[in-house]
Amino acid sequence: MSRLTAALATDVRLQWRNGFYAATLLVMMVSTVLLRWLPADTARLILPLAILTNVVMNTFYFVSGLLLLERVEGTLVAQRVTPLRPGEYLASKVVTLTVLSMAEGLFIAAAVFGIGTWLLTMALGIGLSAILFCLAGVAVVARYDSVNEFLLPSVVYTFLLTLPLLGILGLGSAVWYVPHPTQAALALMQMNLPDTASRWIYSVGYPSLWIGPAYVWSRRALLRITQT
Image (cartoon, rainbow, N blue to C red; front, side, top):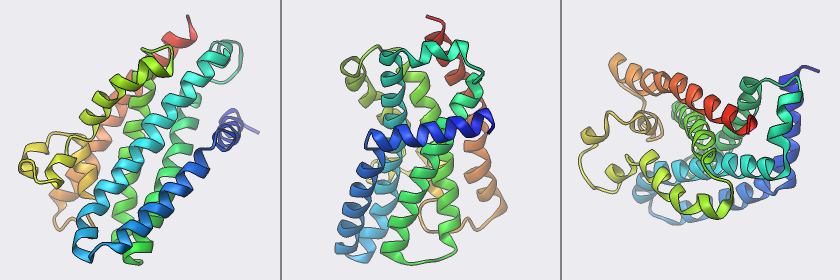
């Protein structure tokens, strides 16, 4: 078994033991029921908002909770004497939580609106935003030593990460949020296939460009934790 495979298995067990999957299942069921209860046009408008909000919880908050837990238990410091590399540690967290987010979001979308090719673009949008939010969670939570210290500032961070949701709520034109990488991923979650090559490049390529810097940021933050 490779180091990454072992890390993936360990993270799945840890997430299961801490009730992440049970919480996700509950949110998935409630979201589906509420969206199906709404008129179709309203549900179509709210779906990206609901999915992106769930992605924030499944990635930014879940990974932050895991790191705080492992920090308190001394697991992060112990990483220095294990063969697991920082990049593999991050990859395990990102992969498991991104898959969880995609499974939840696609289930909700399919349960409310059925199966369609738009689910493929939605999967891309969920995946890109989940990766970015997960890496951001690692980088941000490294500044804090406890949940109590982290919770209040986390509201500001998640607001900034999901700023383009204001456009869906009618606060400003979508053009205002174009420079924000979440706006590009969000465009893929709106059940409309990009109709031009430039829109495909923007929707997929633009948030992908942010993954590299986000990885470097989160890796440096992780190294600071493990070396203190």
